Image (tube, rainbow, N blue to C red):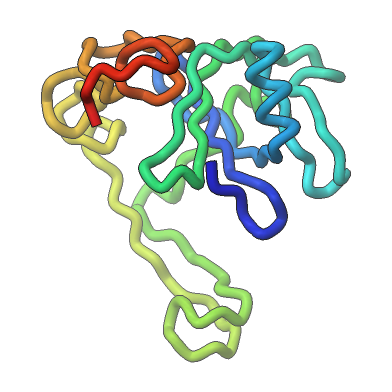
Length: 178
């Protein structure tokens, strides 16, 4: 796993039942180790500068079902069984629909993104949302039409919490799939 200069990695949290994205959090090595050891999501709070177990005060826990990382090994995906809301505002998800016309205004805060001039003025970004809402336009949630939305070759929704390398077999075994 590749952690950033602050020793953190982003963790996208997804409902394992319906694929909804619930939240984005950050994990350090200790949070990742505690999540794997305890089976419940633990994160690093950048504002409080401490570990926090999701639901420690609210009771809205996240039981780990599967843990995957992206191809660059710099982002985690936690598939969880969510109890209660995931958002600190009490909502099920921290994410809300963008403007219905697909246009989103972005303040670039002085970066060289947007209009390219580094003066900090707002840029405009157009976001296109697929007709069925899952980003693949065919309704199966995967992008290639086979219905296997976790990429392990076993069909839709079949995830193995013990398959730490995402190749569809047990940890430490090598099925020959890359």
